[in-house]
Structure formats: C-alpha cells, structure tokens
Length: 164
Image (cartoon, rainbow, N blue to C red; front, side, top):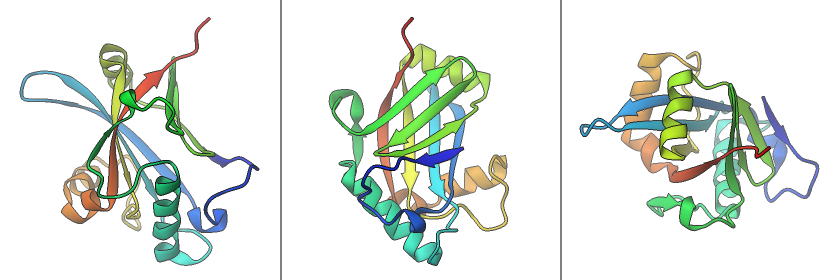
C-alpha cells in the first residue's frame, strides 16, 4: 500500500502513480546475508511513464538522493527524509511524504535484524509492463539491467523499529 500525505509536495503527485516495493535476501560470497529492497514505479501516473520517471527523480532529489551520486550511506545522514520502519511481519519505506507498506519474507526480516540496515535500490525506471511484482526471474533481470541501475539511487538504509 502506498500513500502520500496531504502536506505540500515537491513533485506533481498525479504523475507518481503506483509504487512497487519488493524485498529479498541475497548472500555475499563471504556468506553475509544482505536484505535488499527495490522500489520502482509502475509507470501508471496521470501523464504516462516518462512523467512518472521524472516525478520519481524529483522526489528522490528533494530527499537528498540525486541520481548518479553513488552509494548513499543513510546511516551517516540521519536527517535524510528517507526511512525504513520494520515491525514484526511488515515494514514501511518512507521517502519524503511517500509511504509504502509491504510484507517482506521472514528471511529478509532476519537479515535486517542481523545487520540493522537494508540496501535500497530506488529506480526511476518503471517495473516491466505486464510482469507480476515478486516474479523472481523478472526481478533478477530488472536488478541486473545496467540502465535500471544507473537510473536509480542506491542507499544503505538503517532499519528502525518501534520501541516499547
């Protein structure tokens, strides 16, 4: 579920359209489990995929995440308006006033608990038309496509939890 608050937006919200957030766990050659997040638009904004890509780029830039900056370590930049809240069974990714709640697999939750962060890839390129979010083959092809990776921001994003 994606929602946008009623506060003043830095981008035209009609152009944002729907956002897909997918989570998975990968293992490095050293045996470290890394929790990954992919956030990307569906390209279904009011003015089509190109306007959606531009709106996402504006959203990311207004959050201090310009494209082409390289890996951003948000653990060292706590004032960034980008956050990840992880609670038992679900998580919420927030970028500016855009919030997307998702249900990650247990292996992802365990990896986040172990490392305390997730590696976020937020791309301006839309998810392939007609492909189902969560399809493993499409996800692998999408996240290894050079154009997708260069049209994205890459963030080490600390995971926060509710403290009781």
